[in-house]
Image (cartoon, rainbow, N blue to C red):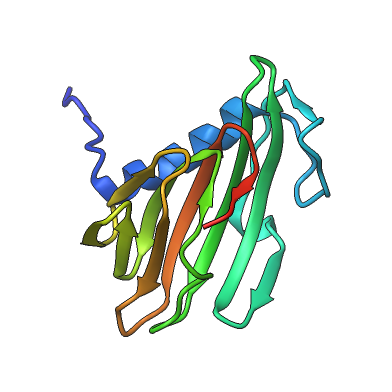
Length: 157
């Protein structure tokens, strides 16, 4: 009998982390409107092909979940597809911390003056209050999940 071992590469890690955040978070109807008062206290699956696509001038997004965990933390998860040469929005700050889990493409990231290029399987952590922004510097659409945790409020630049 041979032993089967699954090796988790960085790309699969990103996909699994985003799925884990959604699963650990909740029961929440797929694509339903929400507020930070919604308590996420049951597990649920979020099939990617069932998430509603919301077009934007720079690409598109798919909302996954938003609400408060049973332990009190706010969490919001969404996926963004960004067209080549585009930014999702100007650099900004907010009170929550966030993780970007890169699925496809090449993103140039500027976070608190630290610049770099992130590719599939890469992860970016942005701490609360830090000025940050990103741009798709590749020739194909870039796709990434955002997992935001903490107080949901924009801070003026």
